[in-house]
Image 1: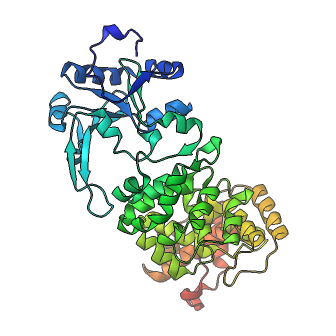
Image 2 (image 1 turned 180 degrees about the vertical axis):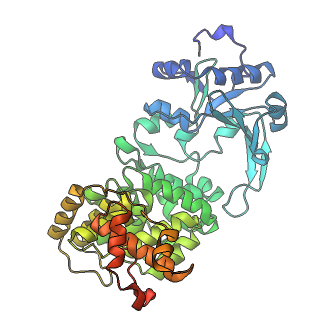
Length: 454
């Protein structure tokens, strides 16, 4: 965007307190894509106001790259649709539209709001649109999310000193913390998520917000489970997730959506802080957090939080394997790697964490951590399979050589041969045929034939 402000029409001026942009924010504004400049122009020509708001402003002040740019506008959603007829009405009842930019970019715009009516700590049931920027900012959750940039005038609207809270590494509510949390219980989890500032470490709560979180944690019961999972997943993905999780456990927040009591869970928290857990993805970290819970509790928790079928199956599978490692043979390691693929190393490392943290897993094998180190080394030295992980032969090939018809026995024999292919690193169908000739498949119960599993 050009720095020549006079070359463009000016949108209406916001009524919130403003100050000149810091120099590094001026540079940031001037680097914005041209398509967003076109959006500013169209809104200004229609007599509206437009401001960059939310996480983009917060992250720009912190020097953190954020590609998602949200806009607040003074025009009602109907007028915005007239100006941008190809916009996506992603949340029109809340005044939100998604504008199409160039090169696959999208910009979410939301009409300024005044007061909203909340019934029980969920999303507002009634939204009233307005033209006051100050009125819109003062209903937001935390001070560093209640700032706005007037890109044309190079002004920063910061009526609640969010910039000061960023400098002091403090999470503080806009206005009264009790009121902000009572409007939407999800803000409880958002508050904990904002403690994690990545490379900048873990921030602190303003005392009033800290007390309000303890007093209002029951508000989470009014939040839909889908929204809780979306926010909890972001917390699990944070660079400083162990610190945030421990604080949530100490404050009694985890008790609201996870099984059991979480204050004083030293073994679980030690496991989360283990150096080998730094590269876990959110689903692996969640499974490890639930390692001491039985499978029924885990299934119930995942179902309650409304995880997708894919994510739920993934967590259940990771959890089910806890306490077991492969045998230290070439054949078993090959099968183990073929089943777990890119997760094989993480599983072994989590097994080390479980044992070194003192976590209690039912029916855990007696393997010591030094033996797991040997397995990790051997896994790293394992050569790729000559024929890859896929089966060399198909059902027709087996039918021609055995006379078996379609059915369970055929499928189980195919799996048995596939396992042998992996265990022995067989290279072609001739090798498979030799292996087939050595099997007593004709006189054995197919229910007991080996599978490819761990």
